[in-house]
Length: 370
Image (cartoon, rainbow, N blue to C red; front, side, top):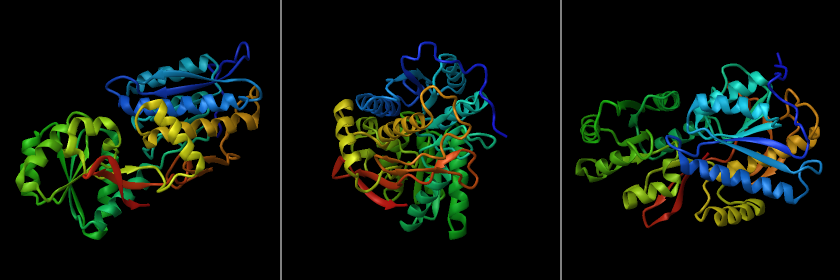
């Protein structure tokens, strides 16, 4: 059953602009660097949409709210943005936060295009109000598991913290590795110190350690401890959630942060649009843009297409995603239903396993593609 728009979804009072609400982590404990890249992509695309004439002659306006990785704060921001008359919602990086925002958007009948969060169960029940650009966690982490198997790893340890997201990732890895003789042991970092973790890795004869933990704590101390333990010289450190993608990782860890494989949602080579956007984002950010910045840019491209197709003043459709066919920075974007996924999904964004090159820590090596 389609949820009708709630009375909380206000009409724009003056019609001077078409508003999009942006949910972005811009303060701790949110992953601020990811939030900055996401916002840079959103803002660049809004500027370019407006330079091209906006939406039916009206400028696109971005109303930004900092979620600070807080689900309750995100849900409250959705209510506020709805009262301000936004036509749609965009963004969010953290899966647990995006899930809270998606539930509220669904209840209000407000279109929400989630840029970056990957948790499969983004909503508790199927909804046509919510769509997602990033691959579902089950898709990306299975690709990562295939990489582990191809690299000869069967005894996997995960350093983990309590989180729906980390628990889901552990389950995906275990289920995918088990039929191939692989095993996954969980090491709770609320119990183990980095030094104790090293001893556990030796005792369990693990060949790979995956960091299912936050950055900088406890990820940085864990990497430093493992790198300095001669008993673990052959143990691969991995970070499927993408912690090494951002410059903060290299700044904090230096050479220790190289050769830590992670998931990245980019093609091997960018096309003309992606190349142009990459240059503009690099100028805007002052560093090489992450895949998260491209996700932000593509989000606005899709929402602009949705808004143009229905008209800036029309009520939102219960399934605004069916007619989308947009050439994004990383390929052509269309949405459909995917098994086990309750939201409309781009199936799939290009997916790589990469690491920072030990010979050139500011560069990346592609190790595996899915």
